[in-house]
Image (spheres, one colour):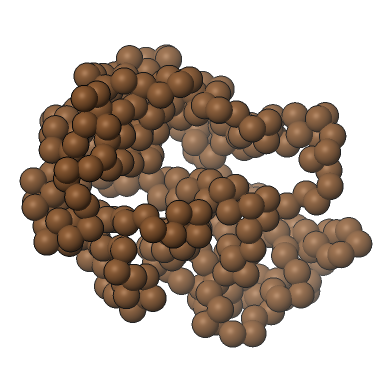
Length: 331
């Protein structure tokens, strides 16, 4: 969603951030069960660098977070879908558990918004919504699309960067092979479990792109909490950094909580939502351990809202937050 102009006012910024935190608390709660949230995004919205390419990159990374939540679905409506009924403007549908409450539709336009609640109007928009979901990429393919779009933006910022992506889902690799990114000589996609460090580093594609005699960077964005303790995530990170040259960087962002009860509750919910494909919500001290032997870059390991903030007001919940930072391997 975009609020053109209103972000000039600090009071409006604070309101939006507060509303965002409350929304995250609702979407991730365990009791009562959280509501379902589904969104279909037009590819056009993902191609416009609103606020600059660095801002768009962060927005895309944020859209890739809900993959561990069964109650949140993100789909992308690609240009290949052609003409669709939502091209005239965005709309929001709300339904409620009460069978006597038919719901509500909020239709946005250039001059404001309309709230529709007549039965015929609701049925019409329900059909439109069903058609949009059917025309959009599947949730898995949408995540792949978001990754490829974020890569394109990253290469605009650093055209000479060489990138190796790791994913264990064969659907991702098949999707990328029909994407123009697959023909980019500075990019490779390796089908592998991220825990298999030796296989990744010894891959011909990795050796083609990464010069192990020069500093490189390893990015674990919102990933390590998917790795259970029995898979030794610290050993995985250490094994990766041991093979890289001095001066290389480790970047980690990880969901944490200072409350043991919240960590346990969120872990249980995430395990249920991912059918067991999750690790654990950890404490800040446990995340710091991933950086043992490395030298943090200022401002150190912090709540990511405090890592070189730019006054845009990032949304996060209060009982849990994303913690991490950047560190380099000393000589």
